[in-house]
Image (tube, rainbow, N blue to C red; front, side, top):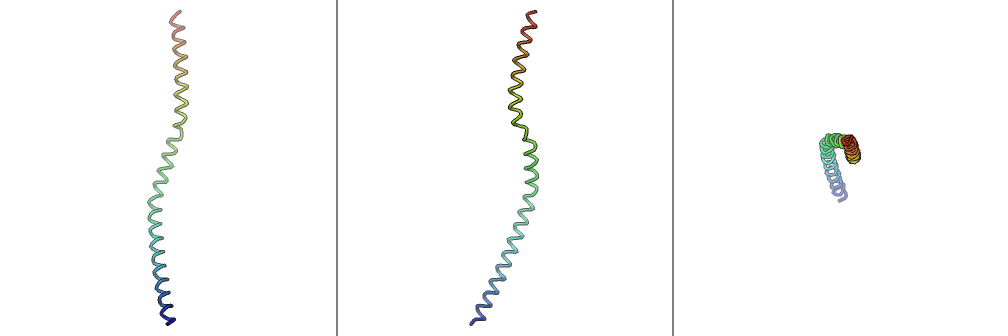
Length: 78
């Protein structure tokens, strides 16, 4: 009777090994599909890194515009 348990254990071992091999292939396939996306994401991050600076630029441009209007008014009076 012990040989039945031993054979059943061997079958379970083979099934587990097959499932692990299948899982490994699936993980490799997912990784190969995700790798280009990571590169694209890094590119997007690099392209959008300076967006916060644009908010500061807008405020400075408004100050420059206000100062230009003051200068224009001053020069128009003379």
